[in-house]
View 1 (cartoon, rainbow, N blue to C red):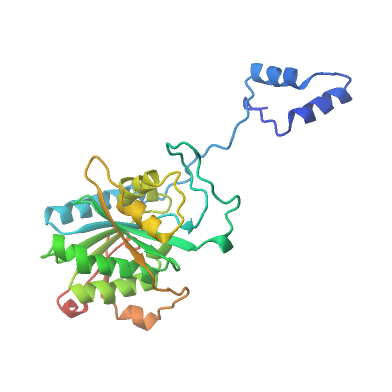
View 2 (cartoon, rainbow, N blue to C red):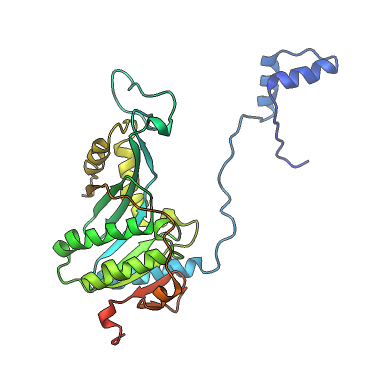
Length: 300
């Protein structure tokens, strides 16, 4: 046997086995003997990362290089992702708050009793330490993600970066901004690059490394702290808690409610993809690519 011995039964089960061998032992004694021999009730510990992608370190270096280049040229860089979806209604929200009596919430989190499901898609502007969260009420689709980026470009980018010509987007490898998604790339072309005349560079984080995406620990974690223990009973409360998120380092957050309905399963044909102005990079071309405005196709 290895030095790690696992016991998958109750104390009463042990007591029954001992009695079958003519040993009568009480439950407290069994518990004490187990502890004296270093047995404890243990939960599974998530510690094994698994095999790392061979290009993982190179991709992190390349993202850092792209970020440094865009920052040096005063061009906007965005970290984007979808936060955990939340049921909106009188449901328990993990965490604790200071109060005289606990909030009374539903015993069960039945979706049928919810007002809907909030889909928070976030954009984090690292230059200005500003976050923007678009709270959807529909599906988390690539069209939803790109519409939010387009709205940010139309409002906040034009205010903070009026002379912007390039945009860097740091995104996870899956989800609504997956590197495999054709809709994501097509809509970035038509709704952002062509409309605003931007050259868009997209760098995806390798699978299983989303926690290093800046938006996770600079924006989403702070939102979770702000509404910890507070039931999200309405979409107005969701928006309020997001907007109220601040940090001592100066983080400010804007929040917008998106009422548009997005459909899943939208397809993009090979012909449509051939018409896009996408140039894969030499380094990890599946994860890194640049989308040029269509008007500049002949120049690039």
